[in-house]
Amino acid sequence: GYAWSGGGRGIIRVDVSIDAGKTWHTAELKQGSEQNPSRAWAWTFWEISIPVPDLPDEVEEGEEGAGSSPVKVDICCKATDYAHNCQPETPDSIWNLRGLNNNSWHHVRINLEDVS
Image (cartoon, rainbow, N blue to C red; front, side, top):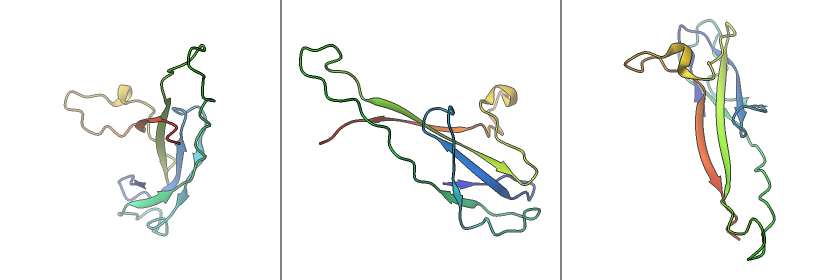
């Protein structure tokens, strides 16, 4: 992924969650992280590997839970800058009519399915 703070403040940390923000994993900062933290004008790239949650055991036809839907995963991330500003969890506190400056946590929702 990539992060940027604005105002020349460098990114010092990026956290990623695969359970909608209940637990967090710290990403490794890559290109752009070497910028002077008080004069950082470029994106800071980051990457992370997080183990995929286990899928439930297959349920036999006719048993309770048969035909259950795939496991839903909510991946989200938040960045912290040199001044320790962190992205807000929701846009509620920064909402405006035109939707400008919405920098809340970014979410990507996926469904995990067993393809074996």
